[in-house]
Image (cartoon, rainbow, N blue to C red):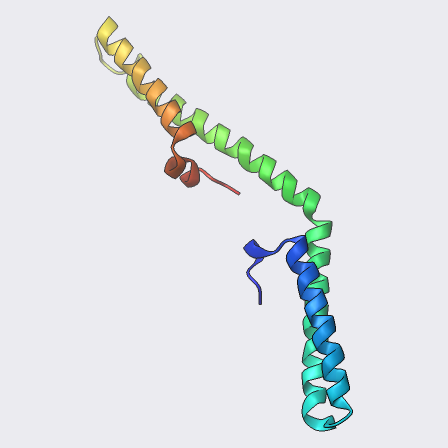
Length: 132
């Protein structure tokens, strides 16, 4: 079976055309040797049905697929905010004994900014946060 990640409308159309061409050639051969080629014809019809089902699946679920992409974007944004909030709470929690100094506050702010930049621009981190 074809990997779903490589499926698109052009691939499906090409597969359907190939199935139709091969099926018509096998049908011509079928007139000469009925036993062996009827099995091939049956399998080709099954393949064509699978391809049509795949086309229906991708066509009907296009809106659902887009909705899942948007949900993935929202989930990544929420994860970024949760990470930043957790880091902020760890470093700036008033219950923890610490001495507030301008240098420490600036370091925490810089750390948060660096973290935000890393998450939003680093391809590896973005992939790790990818919920698609």
